[in-house]
Length: 110
Image 1 (cartoon, rainbow, N blue to C red):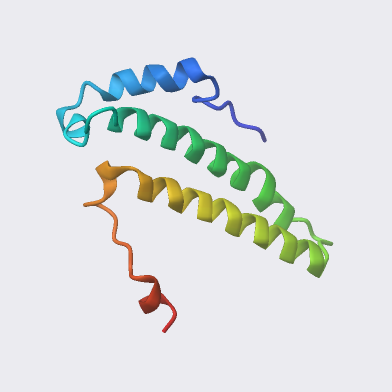
Image 2: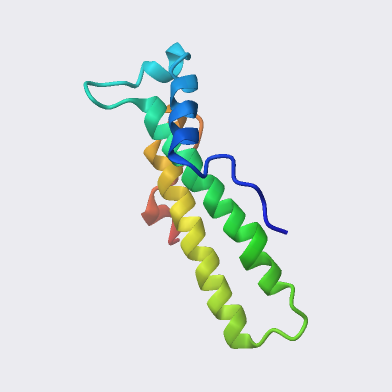
């Protein structure tokens, strides 16, 4: 099942950024040339792509009955790459800094 991406074209991303500029809370993070609305729109585009890759490609691979151990490990690696990409974009958006808790990496290792 392949999803229709909502933010596939640059025009769609720009339109979303313009829509997000209507929010004073979003605009509060603007600084000089930096516009949070644009950052959020680009983040959402990349998040949509990563979620689609996970749901439409990677998860179905793990559901194959006769998947080999090597294919499992390769697919899990690919999922890790997508999750890393997702985290990067979540951390990039200043708007979500107060909503999402990130532990210190040193604490996670314990």
